[in-house]
Length: 385
Image (cartoon, rainbow, N blue to C red; front, side, top):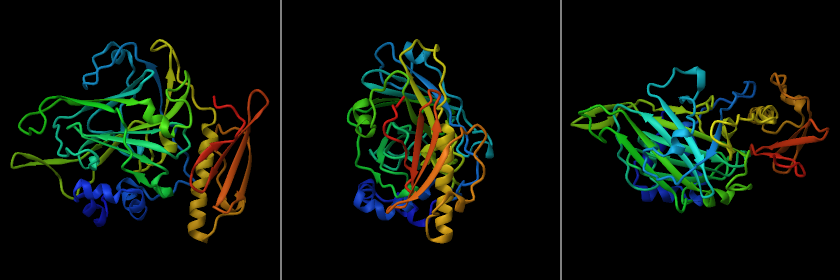
């Protein structure tokens, strides 16, 4: 998706100026610009949500050396994710090059690694917190409690240059991106099977490796970090891949050609900042390969809430007010497999609040809510499994 002229101007500025523009007091005025980088404007009020991917993350059995090579026994035992697909999912062809990721954890770190097939490995950005997606890159998104708010983003290029930032809310809900947020103790490494920035030969792949301290992730996790056995966090990965040409012995991006966006769990839209579509990572203390992923029993209810959220956005754009009842929204029937539930919509001084209450197997009930800022919460008093 081609960025607007103002965004292109911003991305050509020196990193120091860009960091100033990304400060909380400034980014509010530019939030819509940043959101345009990969924002599909379609509102999926009547579209069935895709099923997010799931992954069981096992504990590392020995010390992990962050060198990008992934040659420890624990990495060899860790399963790969499925190969990445286009960000829009089945709407687009499969990626030109295969990308896969794997994960581990211990008491100190959340480890992420990825293998990116690439016949021409190149990079240009060398300053920390540069806008890394202007190079080919690998990106991590982490929402510990799955409420669509207060999530982390980390980007890396083949030169091992990192951009780490924190999002208070998705761009669609006003953000902002906190660019000065940092990850103390973050370890990263890149291994290139081939030669970096040499267009005269053909490379095989580049691989990346991260050790992300739980202490940093705990800041806005609102749940135990490191996690407990069986806990699930919302996570997704993205690979930005630009079409290139060679001129005067250097790699250059093909002008007026949009980037490819390849992801682990498809978003359905050209927008990584829809956390409701991210995958589930289930942490386990068991022996690798012995635990099955456990689908989120509340996922259909959460999907229905997101459907209502987008229906309200559309209603507000058309009527300059929020719908006062679910009947006004003229929603389609719930998707197949959605549990029976009670639904209520109440207007609030800030906007609205929708609550869906479903029965549990033990005879109790569980209520989930969403507000105008897309934050999803479980009602207090229900244990967090």
